[in-house]
Image (cartoon, rainbow, N blue to C red; front, side, top):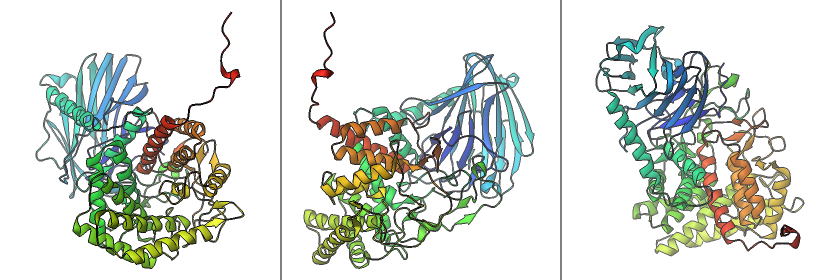
Length: 621
């Protein structure tokens, strides 16, 4: 059983897929050739049958991990009795052309003394279901199956025979490499290589590393953020970029599947797809950072889905898509995998794909509205599709649904779904007015106002003095923290302030925020869950907007302590403070960016603090 904590990983990627590397240097999650392809290395979910690509020193060692500054290049450092070494991991970024050709580059260096590295390459194709063939040559090795090949290229110089030894065991390759201070060698694992294995010279490998550094620093230099939490925000921006599928602009919710919301439980989902909700929020967050090109790409992806109108029962849009925009996400169980620390079942695909979630229309239209305000206007064809979406929504918003949290316990008239339907119609009305576009004004306005009145009447619980999850409960829901953000209610409106206070007393524990109470509002699944990190950052945003500046900052700073060593967040935080759920999660990093920018602006504009006489230090005698 793999006992490595979820948080004990860093991530590398090439903008079409990604790999997770443990803090002791093992690639134990990698899907190829895309984020949503079958895994090649999957020890994260099954230590025995998943496969790995491991680098470690021989003998006893301690390890630490960090990112090369302002890049997505990961450095794992080893401390042994004989010396200090490191493995520098990166994937050279790809352009927008979809390809099966990807490279994991692993640079091995000895910094002090001498160190002997052990390298194990043990792929398990198709979630460990497909056996492979191996061919060892003078210049490397080839692992092959019918649909996919992996080629191992050594980084070496002509006189290096004395440095390394190689052997094959049970279809895996094992290398031993001894380096002295100042020496650097390595390996490159390449999928769908155009030729046989070849020896890569150190100078060529160094140039590949420098090109990758230049790519990431050039990209990050476009960010306009200069606030209090620059390093944290920029790490989140890089993380989001890593989870973007460049050929379409789609953002995966996470690069992983099957990581549990409760260790040992059944809340284990496949997040390697693009949710309309996440893509929509990303437009808003990235525009606020000044990353217009990325926001435009996400907006284009979203516009393509709207124009296709390929949704099912849930209307013109599906709630999620594969990274290429297709909709085949049939859920199946990998019975042969043990799951992360015994958390089963391990699911591939996502059965929630066919759910009705009305909130996605509000998020989609809000992002298009914000993009339009930033100069990214909708062309005629796109507006025609938007009209069709809003005409459908005006007729279908008033029905039960599964809601934002994708419950499997039956449909309800969720307040958040109604709220975002109001947003969709409101933004459609505004865009038609601002740009002089044809629209079904009367119907849109009528239904928008009906939703407002309904939420104020049925979504408001007078006994709780709060807006509640759905119309037949008194349960609170942290999804409603977006009410003031979208302009449905003022951030200091009495109804909102009492709602915020109720959430603070019921859903918040030591600054961490639950999305709702599943015991009070059954969601059709067994077990409990942790606090939702995106909800915590949304709570910070709401506190700042309500003028509770010190509390907002304190909550934000405490939440930052739950990040892992590399500044990454999973979906949830367990009772023990452990990160649980799929990792890293895009929604969490989007919410972090939003919270940081809102809090920065609020702190910059808050009135000067009054200083009481007791706060003024007395002069020293």
